[in-house]
Image (spheres, helix red, strand yellow):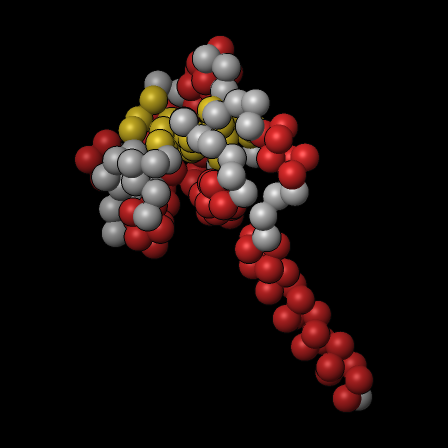
Amino acid sequence: MKPFLYTIILTIVTVFSGPMLVAQEKFDAEIVSDLRKTQQYAFGVSEERHFKGVLHLYDKLLASGVEITDYEIVAKGKFVKNLVKGSELEDLYEEYKGKVRVSVCSVAMKKLGVSEDQLISGMEPVPTWTLRVLQLQAKGYNVLTY
């Protein structure tokens, strides 16, 4: 029974510490070289875990020597309810305010009853998630959506 228990504990430690260990590493030289070809990044997200992941990616890109002029997260869906003052994400976003722009889909806000004054300070409503992502692509951003 003890080997089974040790296996469970090792699995839990690996699962929960794995992403943190990876997040501390820098990207290799080839990746950095490729990513230096652009300085504008945008991410469409609809879940909290993706939002947090993209914020941490910002740190990893900078730590790896990737220059960033524009970095934007475009939020949509039910996740928008998490982007209000007093939420746990408010403290997290405070670290990135002024560096990372967060745009929030107005259609989702309306459906979920979230007003502009309820949004975390610094976050901006946009007409729709789709239009904002298309606009950023048209401006030459590297865009990834989740």
